[in-house]
Image 1 (cartoon, helix red, strand yellow):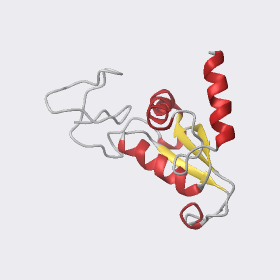
Image 2 (tube, one colour):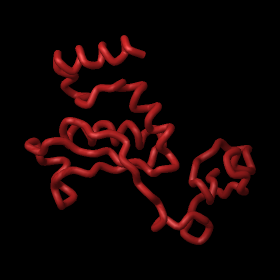
Image 3 (tube, one colour):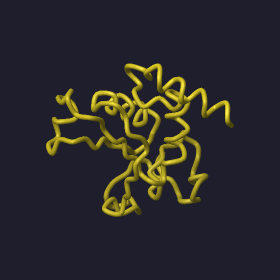
Image 4 (spheres, helix red, strand yellow):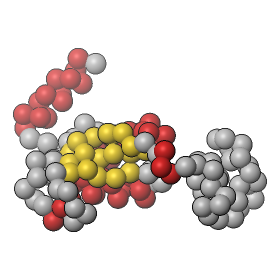
Length: 134
């Protein structure tokens, strides 16, 4: 069952969305979806070290139901996958999913901006200093 407003999927047996109280439907179609997809607004979640890392994070977010995308230096669809020389990539999420996306990112990676390769020694020292101040 799906909510035609927030497009969340729910277990069989529920009849209304617990978030917005809309009546659930068996499947989403353009006719029964209330949200105008052209109004979706993506906001930055995190800038990571490389497009490959951004794609990995994007996959994790999407597997957890977060609407997300990767923005990198390339102008075509293949650039994020094929470029290893790009200085980084931005992970964008639907603003409605931002809080949950931050929770998921922090649970997996903490403050690490390079999830595949890890932080440098200098970054580890900086992070440790920030945590000590808190």
